[in-house]
Image 1 (cartoon, rainbow, N blue to C red):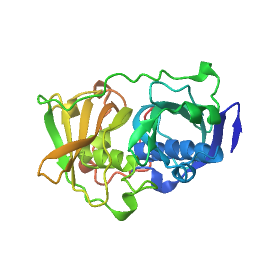
Image 2 (cartoon, rainbow, N blue to C red):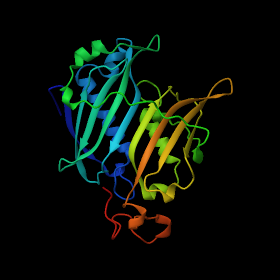
Image 3 (cartoon, helix red, strand yellow):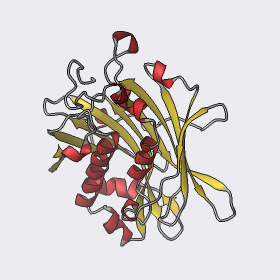
Length: 292
């Protein structure tokens, strides 16, 4: 672990419990790695959540966009590089990339962080913290404007819905449900046959409100039509809503995911379903190359 030219770098193992039945890292595993690198960098600069809370402040993640090139297999050691960028509006953008053992870029992300006043629950200007962090070489910067966030429109066809129970371990240092749990909820409700055949290529998630341990939430996923298994690059929209005291519901997070087939386009024979091949070992699967 080191900080050089305001770039934090570290090497982390990919653990066996962080991969799926095909020996590919879970999307949530990448999100955990990205978040931990950001948290550790902040802590080393004395700007971590415990340190900020002593000043009546904290970090809150507003939005993250992750582009995945490849999902690493286990065992792998991954190199993480993360850097602060110049403040943009009220956001503190952070760029991060994950490299495989051969130096290949596995994924990259741009996250928009907000410094929140714990008393007023309002964002504060991030410039003072930016000066304490220092900023990296602008040539590394990713564009901070992620565009308008997706909406769960009325014309979407619902393909999955569930109501996860909030667990004690879902809460983070701020006492809220951690942002990675939101992503896990969104993936958990999808049909297994879909997940057997597809991986997330791009994940764009916005965090709209906090969720507490006592809240009741529901997750739904929609698509333009119900023929997602017949597409090579389906796009899904996910929304999490929580129940309010007045009997209504309010959105707490919304995301857009674009997907790629694990084994190439459908016209190249890239279809696999565990249910159709109960005797086929999942690791490895004979004759089917890992997705790239």
